[in-house]
Image 1 (cartoon, rainbow, N blue to C red):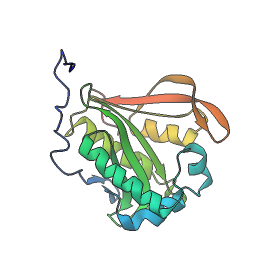
Image 2 (cartoon, rainbow, N blue to C red):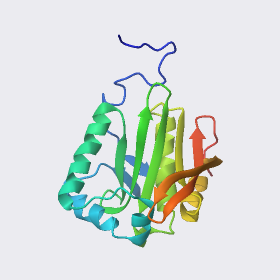
Image 3 (cartoon, one colour):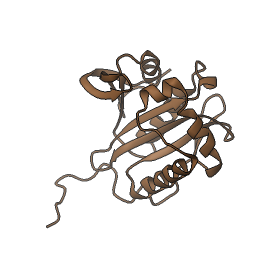
Length: 198
């Protein structure tokens, strides 16, 4: 027997998948675009960086597997469960990755994640990309809340979240496993009513 909602969905099913995943512009000439097959080697190489390896425990093993992930990313958009972008300089050089996962259209919530390649760190790439993504998500896409978490020991990720207007809501104790064991995690979020970061 099918369950039914007693309240209307925040985003009606089929709304996002009715169109292509958008390309998003961010200040400083950044463009968030879909991953392309030619990006696979760069994506794989990113996971050789010690920081990315440490904070992201799910890692691809080959270029072929990366391309399988890219296929899964396209399927996630079609199923309205996730959206994944390459963070690029003007649509060309890949600088990082940003994504929304766990998309719940009924409640209008989703989780954000990101990484930036070493050469692009320290210039605000992650915070500008996260701001652009959250403004699209809370605006045109129709979500009510977007959130993210990071290790309490990952000060750089905390700065990104705060700069992009994601308020610190609390600490999830012993919530995630990284390469050196279990970590407490900071939870940050933005909701529609929050002011845009300045």
